[in-house]
Amino acid sequence: MQPMLVAAIRMQGNYSDAGKGFSRLGKKFGRHICGKAIMLHHDSEYKEEDANFEVCMPIRKGESTGNIEVRELAGGTCISLIHTGPYDQIGPAYDKITEFARQQGYQIKVPTREVYLKGPGMILKGNPKKYVTELQMLIAESATT
View 1 (cartoon, rainbow, N blue to C red):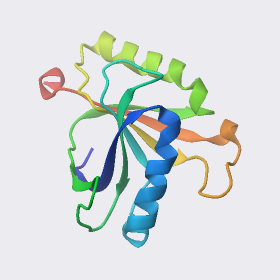
View 2: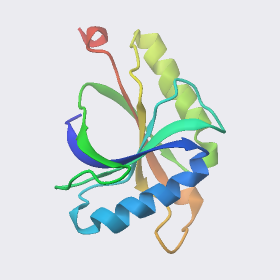
View 3: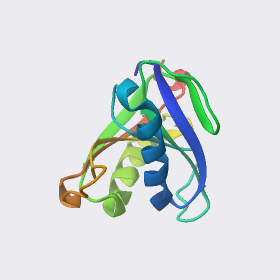
View 4: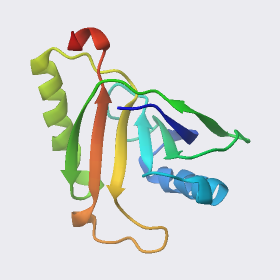
């Protein structure tokens, strides 16, 4: 996975609040956005409440402002898995990818990522059964050699 420039907002709370963060990023960087929405999970285990996460949008250019940070998101070797369906049914996909990592002896680096390839729009929610999310987990380089 290649490094990329992102605009990001760090959040603490419920994942349902992420939409507000993505909306702010869209309003601020709209014409400079050059990829799909990304959520970084900074907790090593799933938390329903008081989660530590970051909403990000890949951008061509921009500067940090207020609580929006513009920075390079690290690249590296990763494993990934595509989940099709509602976000509240993503748990088994996480089980599958973490079990694969364990079987291969890979050490997963935090934060893990969700890339929203197809999801709700800014106006219409769409059909959650057709949402497509890519789970990405960077792995420690020593695990690949």
